[in-house]
Structure formats: C-alpha cells, structure tokens
Image (cartoon, rainbow, N blue to C red; front, side, top):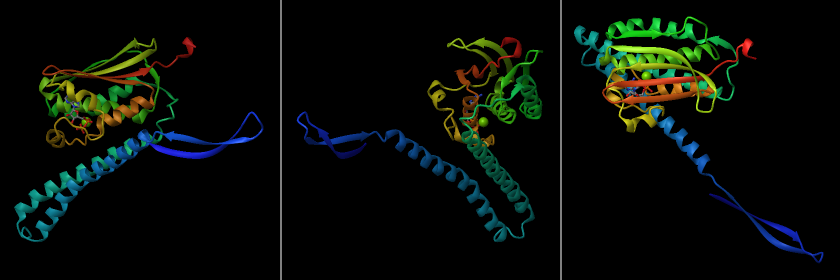
Length: 272
Ligand SMILES: Nc1ncnc2c1ncn2[C@@H]1O[C@H](COP(=O)(O)OP(=O)(O)O)[C@@H](O)[C@H]1O
Ligand SMILES: [Mg+2]
C-alpha cells in the first residue's frame, strides 16, 4: 500500500481558506504480484535452461578429459548431449512463442480461416508419434467449412500441443478422439468447440486449476522424459484467450482427460 499526503487549501464559507490534508491510498498489490510473477518466471526459465546446460558442460569436460580416447563412451555421451541440446532448443522455441502471443494478446485475430483443415494437418503431422506410442487418432470433423477469426500459426500450435499431450500422457488408453461441434455458450454466444479426448490415466482434480501455469507439471520427471517443457498448456491458454475463446479441462482419473478449446463462431456473410 502506498500513501501520499498532499496539503490542499479548502475555501471556507466566510471567504478564507482552511488547510486540509488529502490522503491518497494506492493499492500496489496487483503491481507487486505482476513483478513477483515476472521474477518467478525468469527464475524458472533460467533454472530450466541451466539444467541441460550443466549436463552439456559436464559431458564436454568428460570428453576432453577422462573419456578422451574411449570411442564407446564418446558415442553414448554425444547421444546424451544431443538430447540435452534439443531440450534447450525446445524450451527456447516455447518461450519465444509464449512471448509472441503475449505481445499480441490485445489484438484479436481478424482473418477468417477454416479451422477443419488446420486440425487435420496437425493430426497428420502427429501420426508418426501416434504410431510410435501405438495410439489411434480418431478424427470426427464436419465435411463443411468451419470459419473462425483466427491466426493460423497459433491455431496449429494450439492443436499440436493438445493432441501431442493426449498422445504422450494418455498413451495407455490406446485412442485419442479429436472432434468438433457447434454449440451455444452459457452466455448465449454461438461457438465452435474442438475437443481432444484421451483415455489414459487422467489428471487428479487438485492439478486441474494449475495446469495452464507456466512450467506447471503434474510429474516433472515424466514430462521431461517425454520432452516436455511445462509451457505447452500455458501457450494454449494464451492463444485461446487471444482468440476470445475459452479452454475447458475435464478429467476423470483413470478414465482419461478432455481438453476443449472453444472459439466464438465467425459471423458468415449470410448470417450478417
Ligand atoms: N492428456 C493429458 N493427460 C494427463 N496429463 C496431462 C495431459 N495433458 C497434460 N497433462 C499434464 O499437464 C502437464 C502440463 O502440460 P504442458 O503444459 O503441455 O507441459 P509439458 O507437456 O511440456 O510437460 C504435463 O506435464 C502433464 O503432467
Ligand atoms: Mg505439452
């Protein structure tokens, strides 16, 4: 709380002036919270980057010293170094995407695009991962166009994150269903809902409200093993917000999870 005291002369009924003090209280809590969040974010990002960097430096030292003439160790260490470098690159990519979306958060996308081929493209691109995890991607999309006011690149990233998560964390369910429906929101707004459903272990209720926080992971080890950064759902949330949409997360532990991205329906020329 910040307090400012200013002397103010107040005219009296008899033509003179009274000396008064004006006290203004400024609630600094929101500002401090933003500062704290920013500091936390920088600390988290640095920590996440430092871990693979430390591993890389360590292996470089080993390769220059004790393992200098050991061809087998060299192969193995180079493999690990490659994985760590990839992890750093992925983290930087995600950080950059996040900052780009944040920068344009207040500018609503205004291009009309058909969302159906975007979802199909992502599903096609993730087919190799699905095969590797032995998961079938079941797509249930309309044959007609479904235009929304959207940013193509951002929507690609959004669905990539949701479907990739379902394939990675819900692999044990053997199936991921991606579907699209038109519906009316609670406020009566016509919207397009894209659902990504898996049948894996699901997520315990206490984690649900925190999933879209940056770097939040239910199981850090599991996420790292899957090449995760903990930024995916935060990015998804930012993209949905920029599109003036909503992200719904539902899960029944042991039965799977459903992530639904809702977008306001574009007003088609005939509806105007
Ligand atoms: N479909 C899902 N099933 C179970 N857990 C999930 C699912 N999607 C996300 N999660 C959990 O949410 C966490 C955050 O996801 P995300 O932000 O995409 O980060 P990342 O995938 O990089 O770890 C994941 O680490 C995982 O624990
Ligand atoms: Mg992810």
